[in-house]
Image (tube, rainbow, N blue to C red; front, side):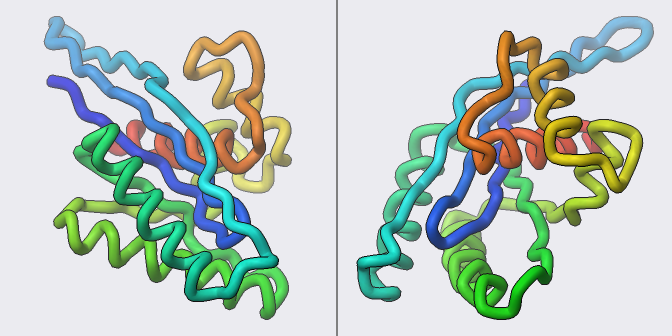
Length: 163
């Protein structure tokens, strides 16, 4: 059975996405293979009015959902860093949750520490360790760029470990 997981790294200026497939192979000992389908980012410009930026996220998220038809969406939970940037990310995240609700898509959320723990075995791992783990797990020759897309793939991989 194959499941398609869309990982999302929420952001207003840059929202990362990564799509993987998980295929369970029914052997004596069940195995799961994971493959990357695609990754990328949705960008909005700070020069554009907030409502239009949120509309861009809304429209582009629908396009991503339509193209990849995920079975499950995995989202990085909001991390409180600076209040001003946290509010902006929260607004983008609201649009993301709205799109998922409209499409009746199930989703799971993970904190940054949960993602780091799942991929590296250490909840305080640095960004490079996580990115290297993503490349290794997906058998990639190099770390996906930009960072937001690599983070989204990390979220998707974390969800795949829960299946």
